[in-house]
Amino acid sequence: MYKIVVTRKIPGIEQAEQILPRSWQLWVNPSEQPLTRSELIEQARDADAILVCDDRIGAGEMAELPNLKVLCNYGVGLDNLDLQAAAERGIAVRNLPDEVTYSTAELAVALMLACMRRLGEADRLVRSTNPFDWKPTIIIGRNLRRKTLGIIGFGRIGQKTAEIAKAFEMQVIYYNRTRKLEAEQRLGAEYCSLEELLQRADIVSLHVPGGPETRHLIGAEQIELMKPEAVLINVARGMVVDEQALTAALKSRRIAAAGLDVFEREPLVTEELTKLPNVILTPHIGVTTWETRWAMTAKALEKIHHELARLSQSD
Ligand code: NAP
Image 1 (cartoon, helix red, strand yellow):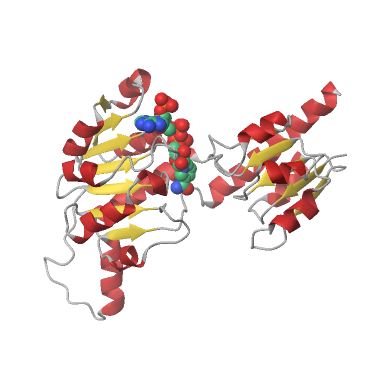
Image 2 (cartoon, protein in one colour):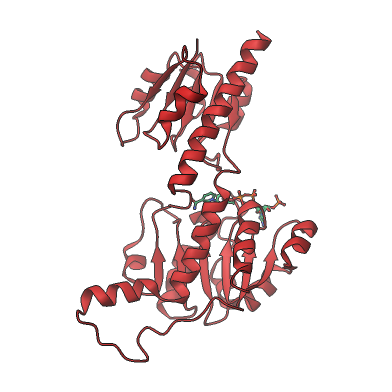
């Protein structure tokens, strides 16, 4: 019999009894709030696996969880876990790289549409001026159709974004640290340098991972290369963009607009950004659709089940 701790209330956890053996014990945090460190340790002290929802689990926590065999992150990023400490203790670490791809790419395209059609401004106009003053020039936006989309980071989400963009007849160019010939051919995408991409794209969409290598990949110097009518989309990680430089560029209309799902000091969003009309802000909702959440929960439970069953066979 194994014990599994789920650190937050998650959609679809009711499926657990269809996936895990009935004899296994499941403890789910009943609150919408994250567990404190001491609550986590208390609940997981005798746990064999933890389904981790954004909690930080470092070497110190692992040292207090002697039974722990599996950590499964409820997402793709692993920046909240100390991977080296886990490896040293023989703890298997799993994540959900495939389940999150479609929804995150779809949000990138939703932000592109929202920026190009100025949906934030349109929504605020209707709420503030009722009846609204219709005229042929009211909130004139731009179509996505036939625009050049520059994708930075051509992995799972970047490629899915390109695939969806094709339905809008967009021309896709991309920059990645390694060239992706198969995807290039399959999606009709053109490889170019970061500088060329920034100069040519009508919309720049970021899909690289976070970390020291991509910190401020887009700063004042890179924004300076962009077209004045360009739009920047970030559904990757806040640290990839120098937010101060972006805020200044949006304020001075050096670029037209931005759609941001992630922020440098997340969950804090600067007051300056919230006051700008030409930015669409979403609270890190790349994967939060019912379909994706259910799929993530089922896959996380399957991975934990698989890993613990494998360990029990090798005992
Ligand atoms: P992925 O498949 O690993 O793709 C990342 C791509 O970025 C890879 O092709 C990688 O190149 C490239 N890359 C890495 N470092 C680079 C650099 N310094 N310069 C240029 N290219 C670089 O990851 P994914 O599943 O598409 O996810 C991308 C990111 O999206 C995640 O890491 C996460 O930060 C973010 N995300 C956000 C949400 C949300 O809710 N907003 C949800 C899911 C994911 P190689 O092929 O050479 O390694």
